[in-house]
Length: 107
Image 1: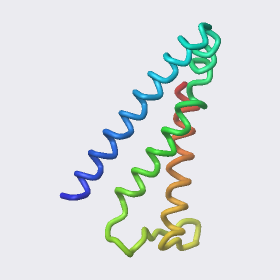
Image 2: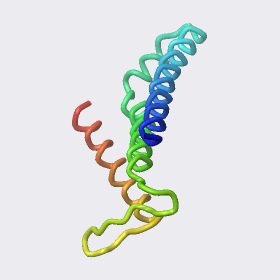
Image 3: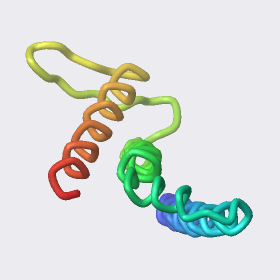
Image 4: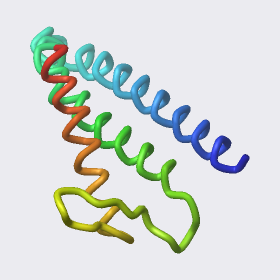
């Protein structure tokens, strides 16, 4: 039950961050009185907004999969066993790289 509550709060926080970033882009664009800033952000949206959001999404996924405090995620890949903090770190890297690849393929 607690995990759902934490996940809901985290997802709402991510949504709030995305809205604040969008407002910040608009306000800075108005303050500079040029369309160059907005064009730069929109032209490079996957790099400026997408990659940080991919990192946050990968963190949320790994944090949600962690089952008990004190125990880490354990899995085996390519004949190597990852457990504890190393398992979480490797899983985060795999999640981040797959989300990044999806952004690259779909954008």
